[in-house]
Image (cartoon, rainbow, N blue to C red; front, side, top):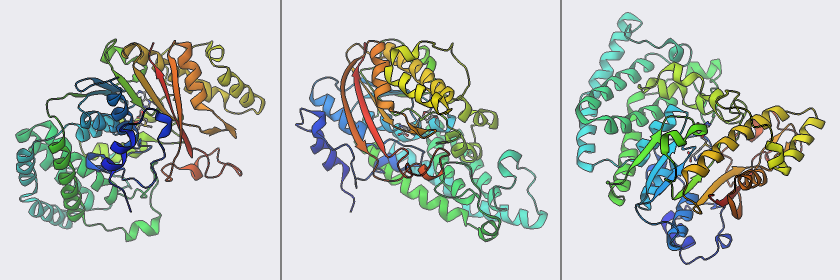
Length: 447
Ligand SMILES: C[S@@+](CC[C@H](N)C(=O)[O-])C[C@H]1O[C@@H](n2cnc3c(N)ncnc32)[C@H](O)[C@@H]1O
């Protein structure tokens, strides 16, 4: 049975003087509470982590209500949501436009009355609209107002894809009448529906298609999928909205955190809680592929914006910066790791690319964060070319070279299989199921 997170976590950090006394694995807790459950996202951070850290630092008087929490890798906005639940303003960056949309949809509360009115405007007449679309399709065999061949071809059953676009058009009208925030909330419901309706295999973070036989069988009913998720998300949003201060700010920049100071400014953040990507998006967690169809079909995001997300991610060989040549001097553990990879003819260049980019973000975060305030990096230790990469030690050493002061390392196990361990190319006998099964929360004080 799932435990109530509030009872678990508030009592977890309440009265605790040492973060090491907490069990950070949070096995069996509900990770979908309130708006955290609006939509899936790959490698989502367990919300109990920011919840517990924020509660702890508030108790310790290190942060207070009205302060700013920053996350350079916002993803689905877990830190931003928890920030607001703790009375903090939140800011973040992400290079995935879908992540930016999702973070805002989850963290910015909507007014109960307007939400119900907007929902009614969306739903009244929807059934008739969808019937009309199917009829038009039956008569013509196609619906010529559908543009977007990149999305459509081979990835969606028909006429369902036309029904999805009809819902999107209704959401566009809601946007005209009720504004962007309400429309965004419905776009997230449509995105969920899009994934269920498409030929994308469930439970995958990459763009894998159902087999040909399964595609023939796949004949989903669009409207009930949409309305069921809408009802669930409305309840989650209403509960969240009742709990939080609507006057706080949430700002998520659709831009690269390797240059985040330009967006956020210096000495702004009172605390940072983040989980960086693992590097190598194409082979580990493909954020862009995961988000592509939903993002395009829900509108507002173009194919050109989506197609490079996995290349622009950290370590993705998309050079924003000059290479840092002496990274290995800064971190002896990185040097040993790269030497081992070189000896084995492993992927040392890829690893170095990733850490070079990651280091750039550490530099930006050092500037963005007020001196002595906590910065928590939630990192997984992955394996590359059969070599374990001790990311937590490298994180610590690289940050220390930037004059962060190390505070504590909190190890945790990943209780559920949320990552494609078995599919990763480096996965070999002996490391099976263990590719990213451990995480560490590395906490330092900003310089
Ligand atoms: C591990 S996920 C973060 C998950 C997030 N903590 C959550 O709970 O949903 C890493 C995120 O970093 C983003 N990302 C990768 N490289 C980036 C960069 N250079 N700048 C900003 N965001 C980046 C990815 O798009 C992805 O959303």
